[in-house]
Image (cartoon, rainbow, N blue to C red; front, side):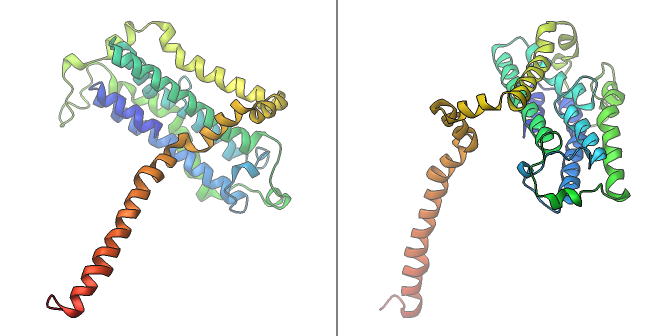
Length: 289
């Protein structure tokens, strides 16, 4: 969903070519992440709880390598495919120099930080931390055959090079790639020059600095200061924060209480009054009874 949000931001900037560029780019590394996850599940006897993984890097070196490439591209690490579109969208949002676009820039940067966090979490818990699964899973852990490995390799290559190769085609000035189709961008909405020359270097590097800093902090806390995390989690503040995130920002609670329950009650009353009430009463006996 975060990548879809980036595309919507680009559409909001009237930069439909950038949105399409990010759509094509993200297809490669997102597809690689899904296929890599499937390769891991296949290797550990269909176990899908990654909290019971850990230490799989020596057993699945190819899968680890391609998922690392996909994750780096997902978080827009410099010179990966995702970098050329995702980072450009963030910079372009700030480069409009409106209050609303600046707010969007910071919100999108926070979203990019969370994307980096869960990417690091998946790699860390699956491949790098101590083994947490049953021994039988590790005894039989194996890479897939050529029919599983070849698509991973192809997508990994595209996740590295596709953005660099095609950036001038999709978002370069003077490109005629979209000239003969319905995708028209008014010259007044061209953002390439503002993004390249008007955005301060600080705000160009801010998403990268935030994401790397956050990842390093959480890895250090998890690896070297686990007791500090345990004490914080057992505190009242830590428990509330953990519960808030564990309950998915309370969105499901809101949906269930104020939408789903109301719809279910309405459906139950409809069934009671119409289907099992007036319809069954009038159907067999008629109006005269």
